[in-house]
Image (cartoon, rainbow, N blue to C red; front, side, top):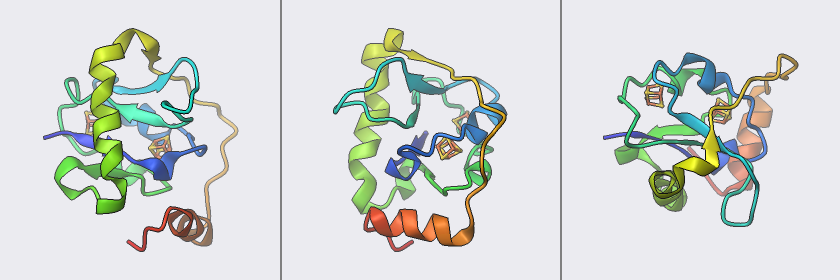
Length: 117
Ligand code: SF4
Ligand code: SF4
């Protein structure tokens, strides 16, 4: 079992999860591309499934792999793909100037992705 960051993180990337991960397995791609959009990913080989990142995410973007909603299933494979390209990822540093989203912001982001959860 591992945990997965979904598209709900896309272009949010406030990195609240990075600060609490005890094994530094939450990473960012060093370059952006259509295949690797601007979000964070969890290295499934390194994740110890402690779950402490999930409640820290203001955008509710993190799920246990077995609980990932159907609409975000492609993110399971994308997070897992890190293993093959590990050199292209790094643990990012958090910018101190991050806005906390309102409940309406969070719901609007979910709606954008077609997720009602
Ligand atoms: S579940 Fe624990 S080890 Fe895995 S990414 Fe979250 S904080 Fe890190
Ligand atoms: S806390 Fe959530 S939204 Fe912020 S970077 Fe981590 S997964 Fe993305």
